Image (cartoon, rainbow, N blue to C red; front, top):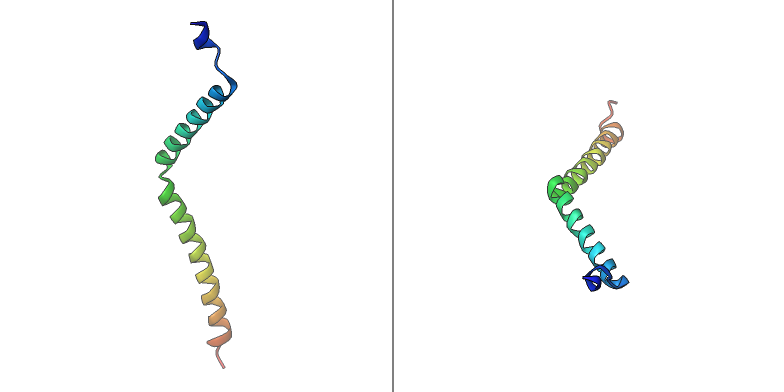
Amino acid sequence: MAEYLKKSFKDSLDSIKERMKEKRNQKWTKMGKNSHISTVKCKIASKMLKCHNSFQNYYFFKPS
């Protein structure tokens, strides 16, 4: 039992990394990581498109 309680530093570090990885994976599945990122990309693209369209409307389609 004393051997079980006394882990080497590397073993304890590896177990901590593994737990962190599991928590991160659980959080990502809860959030829906892929859909969240694609939504952000879509919002950015939409803003840029609106800006581009207003620029076009102002400079190319202004009334004479």
